[in-house]
Every structure is written in structure tokens, then in C-alpha cells.
Image (cartoon, rainbow, N blue to C red; front, side):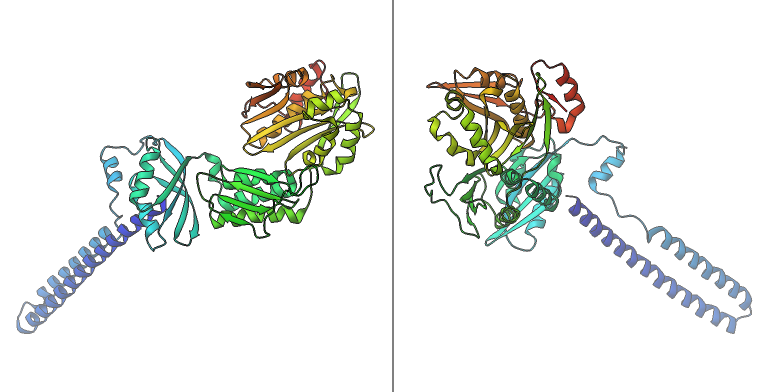
Length: 479
């Protein structure tokens, strides 16, 4: 660890300087006694002998020589640097001053140590002995100990099992390790402020912010009522509930938010941070970014793609009324008469993100949903009958996939009927690896995502996208 190394160096330097001070004092005392003895002998000789002047000159020379020797000794030894580490001295002996840097790896580690003075120092010393450098450290006090969360840089050949074994030998228990990357180097206050900013700008960011704050976990937003209006009984006290690997918080929009992490219990510090984010969301109320893109269809009509929310509920119901039974059944896989009941759930930013397409007159003609489903993410499309086969569905799907990539999702899936060739074609048009699963006429198409697979969106690479849109047959052009 860097701090431990500096402390050890300072301690050795202090011991070395103290040793040099002792030698210097001894030399000064010896010089003083010598000068007194010489002065006494000279005085006696001058008083009782005829060679007094000669002896006086000799004594002056002796005193000058003693003073010069003292000055030389002090300059040579008082400011000498401390002896190097054994590693440094070995490297200097072989001329390794320009040796190449050793490859390293970043690890996130969490361990529990006793709440006693010096327990953390023992752990740091054990890690430093193996060349493990601690970059960041967070402490989570508990009733019977302290949970230390560390970001460490270890030699590339130092395996997780060895790191856990050394940690246990130094007094750590319940140790958990995970490979980290450069993004984890951001300190905790900066990361929390960034997540709070994202949550303040978009209500749909709250589940994503909680997941990034707490690491790998499963988040469920449980509504207070069912689609038919019956109470579900899902609720949580204002202060929330923390129970080991599960925490439950009151959802500002009603119901409860349940967060589960099977591999590691939550600490009171993590619980307080998560509750603060939820309280921020509750104070700010419903909010959706108002950015929008204008596209031109192949026949020349202009449409607008924007984020949608609960304010669009009436317009979405009107679009449902204009859709045929075949279109609604392909979308909702159930009784057509119940389709309108899902809209409030789908448009709520708590359960995902919704994109809406409206005409120049303001009529809503298509909806695209990106829904958080625990650890998975679902995509769904609905395009009004009169506006189908114009590339609107493919455009919405591409944008939803881009939102999923930004949210850090590993895959998205679409549930439809095997006869829905339009949805299958849109999923194939993504150019991503697809998995198909068919069961009793229901088709689940899963697309695996990566940052490299996502196509650039207008807000990020508008020039490149516009150039492709001009030559893309049958697809809307962006303005």
C-alpha cells in the first residue's frame, strides 16, 4: 500500500536521523574535552616554561584542525538519506533503474475486520508485503465490526484465491472479491453525486442509479394496486426496511421498491445512500427529458420521436381505439379489451422508458417500451395500423436498444407471437446475435448487447447517422 510504504520509509528515516544526531553529539563532546585539555596544557606550559609562544601556535593549529574535522563530519553524516528498501537496493545493485513496470490488475474487495485499533493496519501491511497497492478505501461501521471496501491494484499474477487467503490471515472475514476497471477509480462521493444528478433529470433513472450504487443486485418495483385496481398489499414504512441481503423502500409513485443482493449483505451506509436517492426522487416528482427528434418518412411526412410519460395516457388510449384487434392481440398476448389497462403501467417511468411517435398535427401513432424486468430488460412496440410498414417500428427498436446499452443492460428480449413477422424482422434488423425460444405459440427473441454493437444515435453521431439515413431505403430520415 502506498501509505504504508511512506510510513515505513518515514519511520526508518527518523531512526536514521536520530542515530546521526547521537554520533554528532558524541563527536562535539569529545572535541570540547580535547580543546579544554589542550588549553589547560598550553596554559601550564606558557606559565612554567620558556617555549610558551611555540606551544600557543601549536595549540591554535590543533583547535583549527579539530573544528575542521567536526565540520566535515557533520556535513557528511547529518543529512545522509535513509537506507533504501531491500527491493530498491537489490534493483540498484543490478542496475534496474529503468526496469519495465510490472503488469497489474484492479480488484474490488470487501472484508470485515474487528473494530479494534490497528486491525486495518495489519491488513494493509499484509497486502503491502505482496505488492498490493490500496487505491481507495471506504469503511462501513457495524455493531460487531467494520466492513472495509477497498479498490486495490495487485500484480497480474496474484490470483483472487491468494488475495483472499492473505486477507483472512490478516484478520479479515467474509471476504468478497470482484475484478474492477478504471471506472471504479471514481471516489464514492463523486459517484453518488453523479447518480443523484441522473436521477434528478429523469425519473426512469432511479432503478439504474440504485443498481450502479449497490453493485450487482436485483430491483423490483412492486405497484400498490393491480391492473384491475385491487390493492396488492405491497408497501414499506417511510424509513424503509433493511434485512441482510434485502432492503425495502417506499416507492414515491406508490408501492414498494425491493432490492436483493444474494452474495453480500447490505450495510447501513449503503441503505442510507439508497434511501437518500429515493427521497430525492420523491421530492422532485414526475419528470421526463423533453428532447425530441424530427424524422421524415419516405413519402415525405414528418414525425417526431420523443420520450413519453403518464401525461400521454389519454393520447395513448386514443391510439389504442384506432388500432385493430389483430394489432392489439399481437402486442399484448391477451384479451383485446384489457389492453388499455396496461398503459398506465407501461408509461410510468418507474418501470422503464417509453418512446412516442407523433405526427405534425400532434397525434400519437406509435409507442416503444423499454421495461426493467429484474435483471432482464424487455422491449415492446405498438404501431397504429395506418402507420405500419414505414420503418417506424425499426426506428423505435434501434433507439430502445441504444437506451438499453446506455443503461448497461447485457441483453434485451421481445415477447411476441410466432406469426408476428414484423417484430421478428425488426429484431433481425438490429444486426445483433439473437436467441429464439418458442413455447406454445409464444416466441421470445433475445438480443445480446455490447457497446460495440450499438448503433450511434442522433444525439451522439448525428452527422454519420444522417449520411446513412439519406441512402437507407424505406427508413425515416432525421432532421
